[in-house]
Image (cartoon, rainbow, N blue to C red; front, side):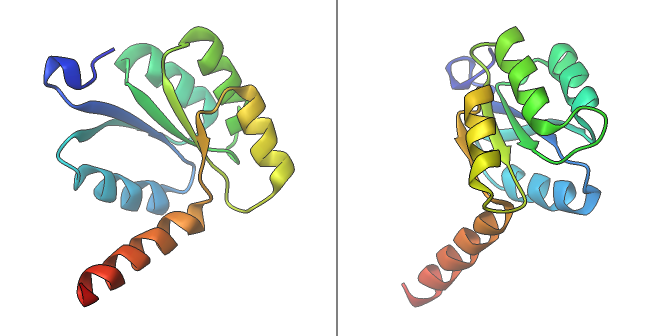
Length: 129
């Protein structure tokens, strides 16, 4: 692991087949000085390959991706990289999908729209604050 203990910050891999969303999320993540996006995968198979090659500290995984879906990718990554932080990003609030991601080994599940809602809430609070 490359985490904060070696001064390099937290290395994050994004895995999402929506290139626009991935690019936007990358910009948001890289606004945080302690976070660095080390790669972007556009399907589950590519995510698994990039984790093996880039050795990130954390992976943010869309659950609805081609080739290998996000739940299967999370299960594989948890098995092969037990200390990796895995955050699942479903597109909706489907509780069965959230449970499947958690059962597969995700450390957390955040609905994509909730990230935007949290951002707007924080901006509005800052504006009034």
